[in-house]
Image (cartoon, rainbow, N blue to C red; front, top):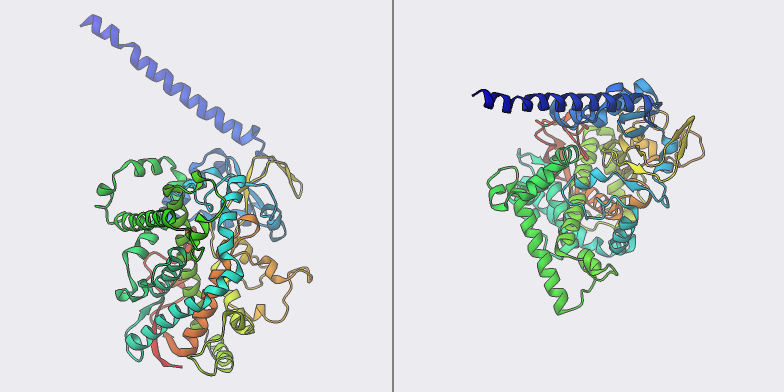
Amino acid sequence: MIFTVIELRPWPVMAAYAAGLYVLFCFLLVVYRLYLSPLSRFPGPKLAAATQWYETYYEMFNRGGGMFTKHIKKLHEEYGPVIRINPWELHIDDPEFYETIYAPSAPFDKLKVFENRFNIPTAAFSTADHVAHKRRRAALNPFFTRSKIQAHAPFIQTVVDTTCTRLEKEFGGKQKPVVLNDMFACLSADVIVALAFGDEPTICHSENWQTPFTKGMDNMVSATHLNSQFPFMVHVVNAIPDSLMAKSALFQPIIEFRHGLDRRIRQLLGDRKAQKPTGSTVFEVLLNSKLPPHELTEQRLQHEAVSIIGAGFDTTRQMLTLICFHILYHPEVYTRLQQELVEAIPDPNQVPSWSQLQQLPYLTACIEEGLRIGFGTVQRSPRISPNPIQYQNYVIPPGTPISEDSYHMHLNEDVFPDSYSYKPERWLGNPKGPDGVKQLSRYMVAFGRGARMCLGMQMAYCELYLMLATMLRRLKFELFETDRSDVDFYVDWLTPHAKLDSKGVRVLVKGVA
């Protein structure tokens, strides 16, 4: 017994030494971060400079998570235009500096940890390295040009017409509310899936406009902070068999969605062996590109598919819902827009082309103001410069992640007075920025800027113009038990989402216009 006790005694001592060394390491690390780090002279809360857990608290735990973007705005109000938001990253709130960070030709990388947000690290959207991103993005660009989307506009109009016809038949003149969030989700999903793979648009026919596809996409978006704050969770989830994951109500729609994509991609790869792709869909363009074989593997294509479909689905759905709400919520806006649409579209069943609709000033103003107040995406997208960057009296060290975002840009009172209000009139005429010289549109960054700006911007605009013009010209609507809290930015899931208990933007179809 004595021998056993003597034999075991060193282990508690070793554990105590190890714990002591760890505490000392943490203490020295905090001292370094607070006083010796190259970022120590930048303003911001000391706790944020000391530990990543400061950000994690707001992204994961504060009011259910997704609150860091809004908290950063409060920090800017307290500390000024440049702040340190974690031990290694800076955030800037300065509209005139935005194009320095997001310059078109700047060789800036993205923050590596953000590759895992949606568990699709090899998608062009996720790619951190700017060289790899440029190569992957170049392969996709030909499909998303304005001329290419213009060629697909008649198809998009067909999906829009189908949606409006269903609205009129099933909901017209009835006290049966339509949830616009769900309806626009199906519309956006049908368009992007058809353009990506050539599938027939069937999602718009789903009962109550709800499908496992749209549910799966929503579940993927809500996991963004878990993956970025705890990157190891991606590997944990990937190690779990799909058969087991599918038993979870959260993951089951995601598994169905991914398996569906896998089948389509395998079919595409099989068709490619049989005949050369024609280039009529996104993935045929990708397979026709000059990318090397290792960039066209099944997994890489699956990552790209999730990225393209997710982006084309969520942001467009959100913007259509928000713009419709604000038009209906402001009677003077609704009346003025209806007058413009009636004059421009005498026959509601003969909607002008996308390019013609873009000439309507008030419709354009309603869309631009919706994009401004809806932000597009709100989550910051840090850039890393290999060289020092001068900002005011500060020299930002090379290799430092820095970012701005549309949330701060679009609510800047110097650029957009009364910024929380929906005012389409601010876009009429030839509006200028604060200096009276730059176009006001320079400060609109709902689609981002630079080499990584939104790939699907032209497609989004096409859907916005065609859907809003057709829907509001053909039918009359009235909000049903809905207010601003059902659209206002509450939680950041990359795109801004409303309060978690919202029932969505609900409307009644009062009849034909």
